Amino acid sequence: MRITKETINFNKEILFGELGAIVGIQISGNLFYKLDISADLLSYLIVLGAMIGASLFWFAMRLYDKTRKQKYSEKNIIEDISYFAPGSFILTAIFYYPTLFFVSKYLIEKNKLIAYITTIPQIIAFIVFLIAINIYRKMIMKYYNKEL
Image (tube, rainbow, N blue to C red; front, side, top):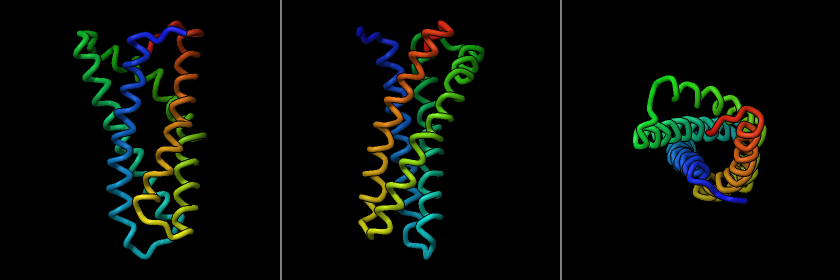
């Protein structure tokens, strides 16, 4: 299997989005950890922080890559998002956020340190998501002849 420049850029954008999720999860985890709230609510807030951070960082990197290659147009960005967002949303809903939620909840219930509660689930969830999103990308390329 040959790895193209587009594949590298696609995964770089996903990785940058994950960095945003790390920022979001750390902010939300540290903001709400000290509050006297249930493990369920804390887990939901951690997931929400990850979602916001990932979306903002991914979009910023996507815009950067497109403008750097002079392929930027509002139409191209909207078209990319229309292919990427549904698959990404479904895959994160099926794989990423449930993994993040249940692993973080498990660690919260075991009274682990906040660094473990936010970092370990994120690493596990990202690996699962990265595999799934690359399979989705290959399907889009094969069936719709669209490069993401």
